[in-house]
Image (cartoon, rainbow, N blue to C red; front, side):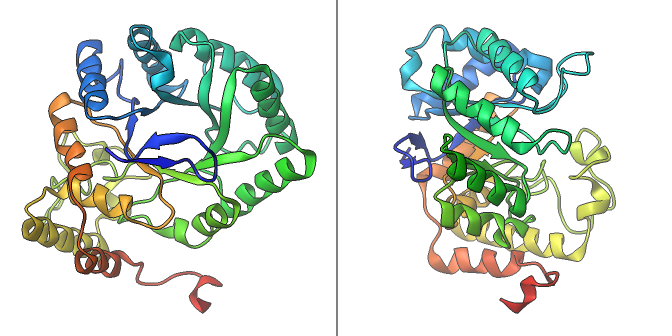
Length: 325
C-alpha cells in the first residue's frame, strides 16, 4: 500500500480508503472487524464513515474496534448533514446541528478527535459562512484536525474555498465526489477546482453500486434482484442501462482479461491513476470481497490500457459551455 498527501496538507493517507458504510447494517460486527483487520494488515490507514450510516451503527462498530487500536495509526473521516433524529434541528449544517453531531460522532467513535470532518451535502437553508465558521471552531477546539466537503457542485466548492480564505478560517482539505468510469462529470468543474485550490479527492462508489463489478453484462434486461440497482435512485437501472454503459463494461472486461485482473480491480485502479485522485473509497460488504478490491493496489495499468478506458468512458456529449474545451 502506498501513501499520498491529502491535497496540499501534510496528512498522509493510504492510497485506498476503506468505506465503513455497510458496518452494522449489511455487514455484521464480526465481519466488519475482519474487514478492518485485513485492510490494516496490508497497510491501510484511511477509513471513512458518516453519522447517518446504519443510523449511527457504522460509527459505533468502528469505534469499538478503534478502541482496541493505537488511535494515532489511523486517519478517521466522518460526515455531518443527514437526519439523525426527529427534531427540526437533527439535520442540516446549522451551527447547532454540527456542534451536536460532532459530539455524538465522537462518542460513537470512542475518540477525542476526528481526523477529517466533512459536510456531507450542501444545505440551502443555512448560510455557508455559518457552517464553515463552525468547522473552524471545531479545529481550534481540537475536536477536528482537517475539514472537507462531499457532493458539492463546482460553484459551491469554490465559494467554500473562498469564504475560508477571506475569513482566515481553516481551509478545506478535500472533496468527496462521485467519480467513476460511468460518472466523469467531476472533470468539468470539480476536479479543476481541486487542482487549483490544492484539495485532495476521495472518490465514492468506484464500482457504481455494482455496475462495474462484473455482475452486469450486455444483453441483460433487468438487474440482479439483490442489487442496489433494483431500487430507484441515482444508481438505478433506468439511469445506466444504455449503450454507453455497455460499451464501458465491454472495454473494462477486455482490459481485465488482458491484464489477468478482475473487473473491480481494474475499475478501481483506473481511478487510482487518474490525475488529482488521492484515494478511491472501497466499501466491501464481505471480507472476501475486500480481498479482491485490495488487488487494485498490487499492479498498475499500462498507459495503453488506461487510455482505452479513458476513451471508452468519455461522455458522448457534454453540455454547454464545456464542449468548448
